[in-house]
Length: 298
Ligand SMILES: NC(=O)c1ccc[n+]([C@@H]2O[C@H](COP(=O)([O-])OP(=O)(O)OC[C@H]3O[C@@H](n4cnc5c(N)ncnc54)[C@H](OP(=O)(O)O)[C@@H]3O)[C@@H](O)[C@H]2O)c1
Picture (cartoon, helix red, strand yellow):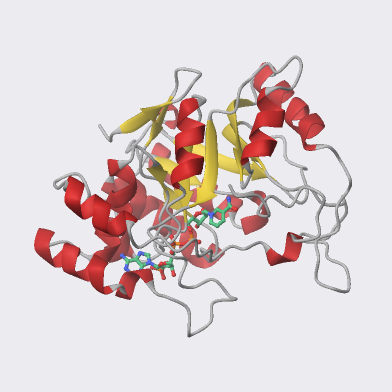
């Protein structure tokens, strides 16, 4: 059994999941199959990743082969940009809204996402109805700040508390305040971009590289592990769910070999000291959105 965190609705969320953003449709079916064979039981997806069908094909293949049962898998999707899906999904996230239409990512001439001016509390209420209808098992939030979470938790008639908050988190952005806050409210946290998202299209060559970070490399050597394994294990030590993305079979395996070592308290302290509040996802394209979350302290 893979270690899991317990959600506030009693469900269990496997502590390591497979990220699928930028997983090419031609590769992701195989990646999902390899991941499930390695033991992954949690897959993180989104409509906007434009590969959910291929992710689903990988899941179906493994169910058909009897490797896994549907109820053993924790499959995540996200409402964002265009909420037009209505399939059975165990877990749905709410993110920034944008105007409805055919475009996947509607932006104005300045490259800013065009808001539909909807209120995220109303959208959350619509998502609660998906739980009531049995279409999703739980709902969560992503890229919210503390005030937005407070507004949600104080919403009159809140029926289904968010079970999880998905945020960017890694040693350069340790998110201590947000994690403590969420945990104090019974909301678990998922760390996205745990390896620093080295293939994100807007990455520049002068940015810091987590996989090349000398402190991480030294710790990895000590445990006879790879830097990626240390970067992923870092979250497990904090009881934070983590979703590294890969489509490369040997990396999928490597990124799951995490349960035969533990980082010491001193090593955790050293890793936490790398924090510089650096974001790979500063969400610049939404900086003028009325709900832009990243102006707040946390
Ligand atoms: N909620 C949100 O707003 C949000 C935002 C961003 C991401 N996410 C989710 O979080 C997931 C993970 O974040 P991410 O995709 O940004 O970045 P990431 O997981 O930090 O990094 C993925 C990159 O690292 C490479 N990689 C994977 N394992 C490696 C290893 N062992 N050694 C060296 N390189 C390795 C991958 O290459 P290969 O694939 O070529 O192996 C890929 O280029 C996403 O896929 C998505 O599901 C959510």
